[in-house]
Image (tube, rainbow, N blue to C red):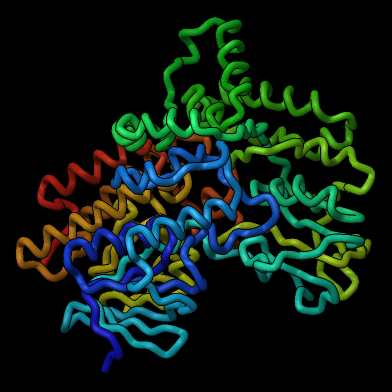
Length: 533
């Protein structure tokens, strides 16, 4: 017998979970959110490593459903850091009085669907059992860290942390020899932030990354008034752009002369945002020749900042195109490698073999002695948060096993065979990677809430995608993704960073606006990809 009976259980208290809790509670449902963290924030609770910050403009990384909620919060700068972002999410939770329906320090262990009752039985690591009609997963697309990667990690005599489990109290780097494994978006933020705090810094680099300079500007009252006056514009614009940002693709490569292209690239580059990646020329994602020209533009900018030919070879990509990996923003990151206390350690052809009490040993037997190891080694993106829970659907089928064979969803909102399991930030939706996350998560949370409202109005208790509906979406997703360079480039975008993970581009690449319209059209047609009982 269950300890608790609910209408809906929400897993996660981050951006999506807080909004979903609010929406379902507004309908009068008995709903509770559970989170393994000790506070709200999701990604912005866990990722408190040095230098963690937005690379979406703060004024668009907000909830847009409530004018007062938007206007009563002011950001200090264009790209604020983790502490400020966490304070904002606490402000949201307090303003909407959400804490009374959130259980912290509780991890969901399993969820089993009962076909006789049409309900889920959920268990937690604290021994709770919950009987609920709906399970809504708001676990985040980057919340399952790749932590156990190297033999001997537990033998290290110093301090070893993964960036997404960084200690609240921080780490004192004074007098320390520090190693950072990984140089993606997170590794870049860590390296550029701690280089002047440590005695020695070694950065273990396998794959070079394109990176764009961040132009972070402070905000005064006039700036706040400027972006707050644009709330209605954002409401109309953000859900309909290609990536959920305020900017969108407006230029066509072939319609401009070479000089005009260069002028446009320079103009966008100087803006210091992700616009060069997400809203310069859409051909970047489809045409290898055009992608190479834009890639060379970025390489040229990076080469101009590096003084050493060895660093240029190690830090600047040449074997994949700009934009086919996640593009980070950085602040004087490249210049860090000119410091006397910083060493770039190439590990592509001489990988890390093991970790020993003294530090890191490479395949050639060389030992790098360290006091602190920071693992910026990424995540099992999109799927990992759910495959680490024992989720059982119809006939006892396992989501972990199903996704271990083939990663499939219906519009990233449900999975065939798992009735009343409603999902956000999972594969085959833009929220899996290619989106300003608040834009996409708000839409998914609203779609889920409206589906529940529809069911209640029509006396239905169970919703499930049809096999046919799911097949149509998967085929459309694959056709769309197959036309892009994402499908041809190994990265976490297609699961290549996780050994044995089925290869599929995780994010829907047809655009945020197109995705939103497709989900709304499906609902307007009586949820044609779904069946009810």
